[in-house]
Image (cartoon, rainbow, N blue to C red; front, side, top):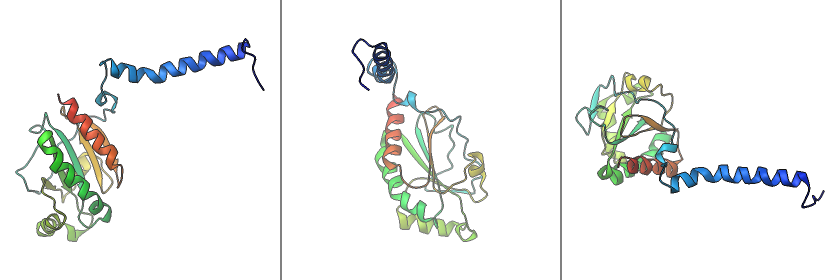
Length: 190
C-alpha cells in the first residue's frame, strides 16, 4: 500500500518518526552540550560493602573502601581452581597494571569453592603462576562474598570514587565493556 503525500496517516507517521528521532538524539545532544556524562548513564547499584571477614591479605596491607575513597575500585571474586577465573586473570592483571597509576585499585577476593583452595600457600602459588600482583583478600569464610550477595566465580564489581557500585559482570567475557566502564569511571573522578 502506498500513501499519498497529503495523507493524514503519512503526516502522523512523519510526526511520530520526528518525535522518535528527537528522543533518540536527546542523550547525545545533552552529552555534547556538557550537561551529562557517560558515568551519569551508568546505573547506581548502591553503596559498596566493605571487605569483611578477610582471613589474610596478600600483596597488600589490609584495605578498606573508606581508605580507597576517591579511587575507582575493581573487586574481582575468583578462586584459583576455577577455569573461568583463570581465563579472566590476564585481563584483570592488565587492568591493574595499566590503570593503577590513573586511579584504579584492583582487589582480588579469593573465595574458595573447595577445601583444597583454602590454604594460603596454595593461593600464593596460584598467584605466582598467574602473575597476580594486585592485592588479594583471602575470604575463606565468605564474609565479603556474602556482603556483596555474590553467587558466581568470577564476578567483577566496579565501584566509583564515591564508593557506589556502578557495574557488575558475572563470568567470562565483556572485557571491552568492562574496560570502557573503568575508563569512564576514571574520567569521572575529575
